Amino acid sequence: MFSTYFMEKWAPRQDDMLFYVRRKLAYSGSESGADGRKAAEPEVEVEVYRRDSKKLPGLGDPDIDWEESVCLNLILQKLDYMVTCAVCTRADGGDIHIHKKKSQQVFASPSKHPMDSKGEESKISYPNIFFMIDSF
Image (cartoon, rainbow, N blue to C red; front, side, top):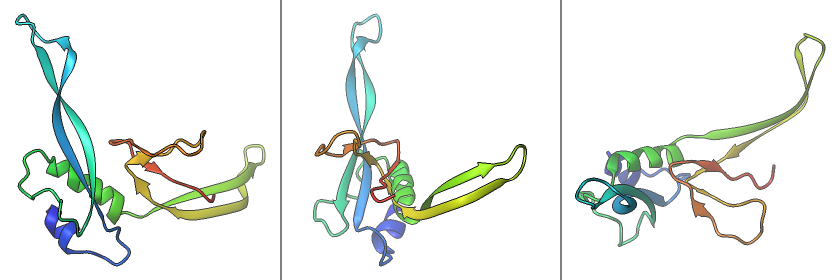
């Protein structure tokens, strides 16, 4: 499914990036049982590659969560999103009156950029999805 919809069928307006969700085991600080061993918990990492990269993970890579990777690429590349902002008033118990409205297409991202400071790098936010709006 991943190969068919994201590697082979490529639309001109589609991003050339592919997103892979990799599962790794991380050992937590808490002890899990009577034997005193630490419990291994799954940790998620998102890897990004250009479609034509020679370093793409193989389709049989057992460390890749293929279901999550398909869903993430579907959300990021195949769906269209619009943000709308409006200035409205409402008379007492009446209908809403729209004075001004602006809509703009936005793009989903598995990373976020802090807006309260300049020059900081984007940070992976997966599984949360953010929408960057620079000119609204």
